[in-house]
Length: 195
Image (cartoon, rainbow, N blue to C red; front, side, top):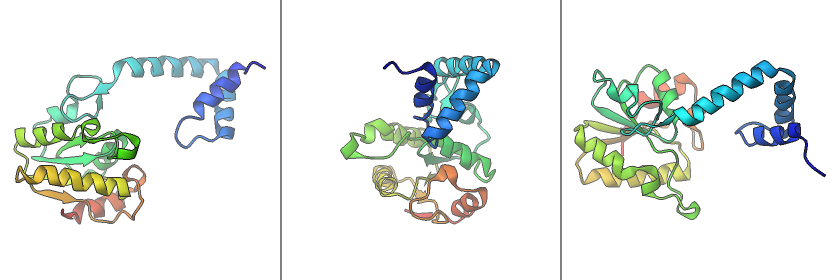
């Protein structure tokens, strides 16, 4: 039996993080019922897919070759390393950090085939050296993969004699930076320690 278009839409929406089967079906019906919203969503999705790319310096998402953050020369001479663009946004929203960023788009996961080159770690080291940073702050998730990634990055930066710190563990083990509230991130940023 052929799957209906609504079911296909619900199945696709269900691939989004945090969207279960029932929520996906409810969203699909809502979009079919509201054709104007569906059309607007379709247009912005198409525009986003074709117009968004990685910044050539920090790998954050941008519509330009270099993002606004990397072009802001008033920022402090530090780099905060995060897993995802969502993590970068969370750190920026605290208002406490005014340096540069580097987005890994993941963690080291050799069993899944994700290695240092997939995360742009050599690009991070090159960037840190080229702008002569005073500190690299590792703001990675406190998971096994996050800790392994921190250790690898710290090892790579050690030979360049660059100070490496890690967020204080105001974030509990297993916590994701993206979902931490501003107070927790604020305390973690203020209490960061040497690596």
